[in-house]
Image (cartoon, rainbow, N blue to C red; front, side):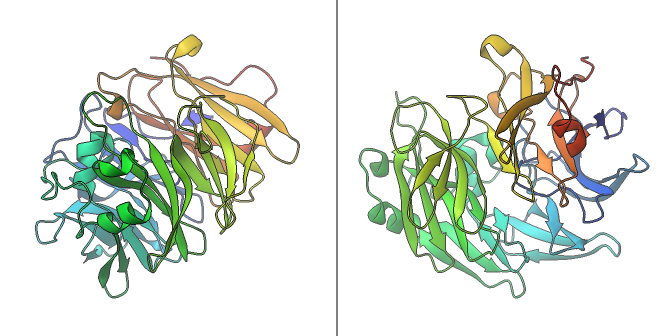
Length: 395
């Protein structure tokens, strides 16, 4: 286990746990490079986008963007094949003020799509988009600063919601608007307030997607509740839970979803649950961090589940990486690292562990050194570790 990002005075991170930062050769790892980590990004703050050569440790700069945040970055990822990367940019010429850009690093050739990416199908042909300004008003750490939402005061607008773009032609259509979503899934009082679609993800086949429908907290209300909804690419939707506690998830296959959820009840603590998106059947799984949230992710062969904890309680300012071996029924805590507690919760550095395409490598982001860095660990290290958690030197 070691830090693979350069020690050059910059801060490095990749972003979210369910995006793929490794190329198919597993030699290059995408990263964001920034100059600060102690505040929210402003509209004119630039993130450099590139890859670290895992053989040489060099950072290879590909592009820049001012459409980014510390939780999910610029939605940076390899696109279609290793010859292209995709990321979001600021663009005054689009309806939202943001766009997705596709870059061929070898030639520098670029093309833009009319909507920013929230997710892209595995084959690269379809892109899902949502309103990042609306997300910024809900949680700044997941949206982009500097573009006011023209529908800010509309609780469920008819002209905003989930957009689908054909990446080959750029053709974009609104497949599920907020007003229709509210009417199809009413559950007062939550559905009566301002609504938000967030954390939207294609299944592996790219023919269906899952999203979280959340209510903006009303004055005096603490937190929010979340419906879990699945849809096809024509916008035909089905509710999987009422408004309750639903958080991070990952598609196990085209049908089953691993999610941290209170399992349809409003006030219970979190559990790790496997839900059949067609029947709604739910199965509780062993939970490494009971009643707390984790970022849960299957390995490519679906044998292992990795998840990282939040700091707090008896753990103080540390984060743990948990590993569940579903074949052996064994749960371990192979990694524990110190973390910087930030002045603003939305700029925290979650580990956001990500598997490489083969499942032989895992990377995660960390502030154990006092700076944002990215760390590499092998599956063999994780599986073979039966002692106290591995740690990294603190600052």
